[in-house]
Length: 233
Image 1: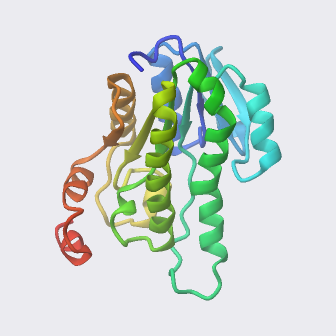
Image 2: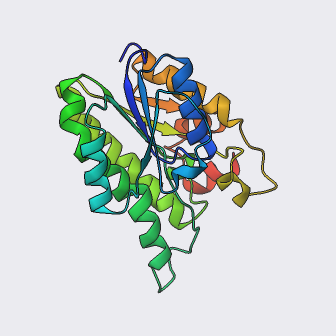
């Protein structure tokens, strides 16, 4: 990927948080179309003729298949949608963990598999938004799902890279969005700046975007025991 100009992009979770910033900044970079996907597209308030609102439930196979039919010209997929429940990994009722896995892992995988062949035909890109919590045991069940997405993204890159697809893993700490309010007293990054760094990474051909200083430090310390990684955050 050398430029987003002229690309056709599908963004999940486009109705709020970083999703809104992806939509607006992609338009600024000259994309031809943005499929702004969300469960509730009435919340998509950005107006531009290049925006195509797309009702999408990433955990529903029929909804994903319909998105594949409607958005058949996609060249870049940004798997941005996610949820956080933060349940203990030891709870006997795993319903919240399963809910997170459906959205944070199986949703991106379903979309990637739906669009992979046509993206490969166009030498496009797939972007999976994970988290620094893939490497830190904070957020409990949420971190488990993001660690799984990290591994899946690496596997996806090995499979699709030889076919000309750029697979980008995005790793970031707390961002000033609704989801970030789970930790009200912690410092948070500007979502517009995080999205800018991600889009720069796509256009630079990066495999990973470490979108803030904390994430850079944690990524560099993966050889340390988890207690030391936590102590240095």
